Amino acid sequence: MTDTRIFLSPPDVSEVERKLLLEAFDSNWVAPVGPDLDAFEAQVAELVGVRHAVALASGTAALHLALVAAGVRRGDTVLVPSFTFAATANAVMYLGARPVFLDSTAASWNVDPDLVAQELRARASAGRLPRAVVAVDMYGQCADYEPLLDACDRYGVALIEDAAEALGASYRGRAAGSFGLAGVLSFNGNKIITTGGGGMLLTDDGRVATQARHLATQAREPVPHYEHRTVGYNYRLSNLLAAVGRGQVQRLSEMIAARKETAGFYRAALGDLPGLTFMPIADYGLPNWWLTCLLVDSQKTRDQLLARLARHNIEARPAWKPMHLQPVFRDCVMRGGEVSADLFRRGLCLPSGSALTEHDRERVVSALREG
Image 1 (cartoon, one colour):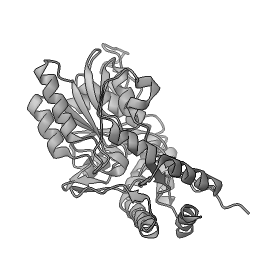
Image 2: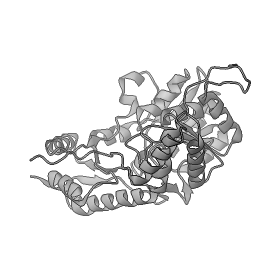
Image 3: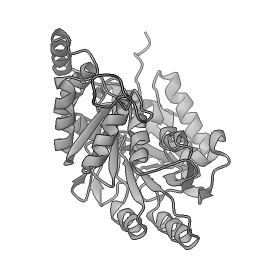
C-alpha cells in the first residue's frame, strides 16, 4: 500500500470555517460584498495594526492596486527583488512600467537593503528615480525594513510591502503587512491562511484604501446609473470566501505554532547531515514559519533529494527561480544576482503545512536520510 501524498503547504480548514461559510450561504450574502467581507477586513486590519484593509480577488490584484496608488505609470521603473514569485514583477508590467531587479542577502534571503540604497542614490544622481520599491517577505520572514524605509524616505520613493507569504510574522515587534504606503497579503490555497484564493491590500492611508475599493469594483461612480470615469477592475473578494477567511484568522496562531513545530522537528532531525543548512532566521523579527527551506551542498544533490522525495509520494519544491533568470524578464536590468541564483540552484522547500502529522514529518525525514 502506497502512503498518501504529502503536499508542500495544503489548506488547513476546520469546522470553524465550515460553520461560517454555511452561515454566509444560508443568509444569501453570496454576492461580492456583504457582512462577512466587512468583518474579515476589520479582523485583519486589527491583527496587523493598520487603519484600512481591502479584501481582493488575489494578492496579485492587491499588488497591482498598491502600485497604482504609488503613482506607477507607463515608462516608470520599480525596484523589485529578483528572488520572488513572478506575481511581484508581473504587477509592475501590468502598468507598462519596468522592474529593476535587485539581489538578496544570504543573511535572510530577502532583498539586500544596501543594494536598494545604492540603486536609489545612483538613480537620484542621474535624475531618474524609480516610482516605487517593492520589498518581499520571503518564505514568511520580513525584509529588513529600517534601512529600506530610511532609503525610500530619503529620496521620496514609495515602499510597498509584498507580505503575501508573511501574515503573522513581525519585524521589531511590528506586524508584517504594516510597512510602507501599502502592504499586500495573499490567501491562496498554499498560504499560512487561505480563502481558497484571494488577497488583501493593507494601508494606513485612507486615500489609498478608497482608491483601491473604487478601482476594485470596476470604478463605478456612486450614482444610480452605471457611470465610469476611469478604467476599473473586477477585483473584489466574495463574501463567501471572506467567511472562510474569518475562520482562518481565528486559527492563525495555532497554525503558526504547528508550522514552527515542524520547522523545529526538521532542524533537529536533519541538522547533523553534512551539506545541509537551513534558511537563516534574522534576529530582527519573528517569522510565521510558512515554509521550512534549506540549502544543499550542490544543485545535483538538491535535485537528487527532490527525486527521492517524489518517489516517496512527497511534494517538495526548489526555491524560487529568480526573476532575472526568467525568459520573460530577460531584457530587464539586474543588480547583483549571485546570491539569488545560488538560492535557486541549491534551495529546497520541505512540506510545512499546519496539518502535517508526526508520521508525515517522519516520512519526509526518512526519505531525506535514505542512503
